[in-house]
Image 1 (spheres, rainbow, N blue to C red):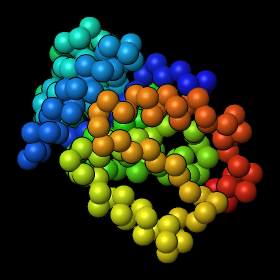
Image 2: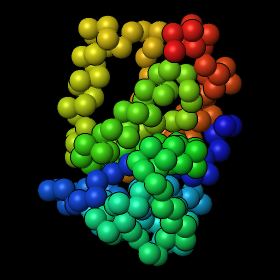
Image 3: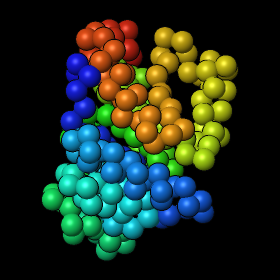
Image 4: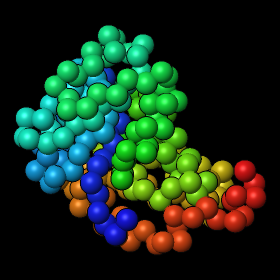
Length: 202
């Protein structure tokens, strides 16, 4: 990847959450992505953190690609401002396209859907399917319980040393893009190929 991040997939909630910092962080991230010339790939909604990050990009001249399954276009209020809105037949197609269109992944605060999308990318990375950077935006310490759980999984050897996944964290929005670029630069070419011992177990 040579440190080049052209598009970032942002997973986040379709609601605003209880802390104003969540919406503020989403809007600020959108602004930064636009200013850095990085396109946003996200779930396509216009409300909650989804809407905040997308509008943050659009309000500052950036490019937004929304990917949303047909059954959610009304519930999550698909964002009509987005330059590109892809409507998929189901969640599986949505997630695959979000992966294909993105050079890195960021998880802002969110609910079960956000968690599921984040963990899926972690799993794919663990199994050697990709080496794209994955970052948890730990706004107002939202993700502390998950980070503690991951530490517990490592301690109890359910995440074994040879199958560990490098998860980036950032407490400040301003640190997200620099950390993604650094990780992309440092990803060894060999990491992009599935390890033989992992492949043999699939």
